[in-house]
Image (cartoon, rainbow, N blue to C red; front, side, top):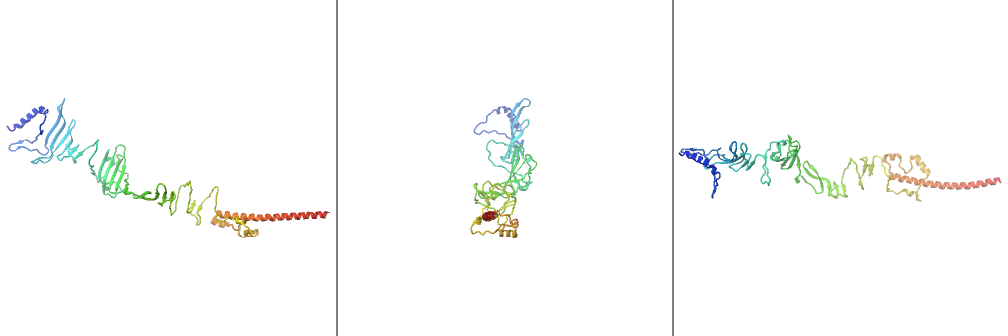
Amino acid sequence: MRKQVPYLIGLLALFLFPILSHAQISGQYPLLTTNKNNGYEPGVGRLPVEEGNTLGQFQMRGWVTDDGYVPGIEIKSIVTGPVQPDGFPANMLFSTGYPAFSTRMAITADGLVGIGTEAPDFNLHVVGNTHTTGDFFGRIHFDDNASADSPPNTYTDEAYFELHSLSGFGTAPASTATAGGLFTLAPGGASNDHQLFFADDGIFHRREAAGAGSWSNPWAKLLSSGDIAGTENRVAKFTGPNSLGNSQIFDDSHQIGIRTTSPDPAFDVDIKGNTKADGGLTVSNDARIGGTLGIGTTSVPAGYRLAVDGNVICEELRVLLSPAWPDYVFEKDYNLMPLEEVETSIREQGHLPGVPSAAVIDKDGLPVGAIAASQQEKIEEAFLHLIELNRQMKELQEENARLRTRLDRMEQEAQD
């Protein structure tokens, strides 16, 4: 008779189910339970549940034409661990689907929630895509993928974080770190894939075409304040592959200096050695050179400031002479060389006295200022000689006129 009691209770539950489905559970401590055992054994009693047993199922069904009542959703619980005298672990599975059920969500005995998986490893474990329209609060998990340099085609429309070993890269960043965080951004479509490697000594970047078979582009370090050491108003330069420091150019937005930090005037070049410009140089205002200048030549003879290898053309050339202009020739105490001595000097020296010879000009060049002064001296001396000759000629003309008059008178007296 005892064996028949459970069956009678079951038949009664089936009979009363349509009525119970509309019943209200109420009271101070309302409770709806289902009980699971593995049968009954005389002398033992009810047999306990075992690992893997389904404790119970709850389905919501609806009537369809061909199959009668069919389920739309199902909730069930399964024993997942060893059964102890005082209890056991179990999970809860939530299933939907048509035409067959698929488990959509699982809650384990440890409180882990899985979506898309029945065996979650985290408090919330999602297999598939996620989306939120609100704020996200929590920590981002880094996968350990240290031994592989995964190509871009392994990332699809995602942002991915990894813990990565420096030695795992096919082409490693120029870093001193042994491992760091790797962030991959694969926007999808025709957009490039990008990676950032967060190392102990900085952040490195590389990019590749979407879906490429490997990372072929090199890494570039993103410079930070730790890679920059400079002085205010000094133009920066690379002092190493991944560092910036001072150059020799100073710029305070008002004055520019090269190899000087106190330029005067607006542009100041303090260069101890030579400067070379292979292109053109245009100066629209004043230009002042304190040293020597060679045009068409890199060699300026000692004692000279300007050397030009080629022709020079200008509208006017003005030379300021240090010695006096030779107006001293017209002074009364000037010792004018007689023409006889000039003739002798020319015959013996082959050039005017006081004027450089052709050999000297060939060797030392033509001193324009000195030659101009020397020529002026000779011109003024020549004028003095001409003036003297003109005076002597007039005296001769006057003497000749007197003699002519006397001769005419004598001839007239002879005829008379």
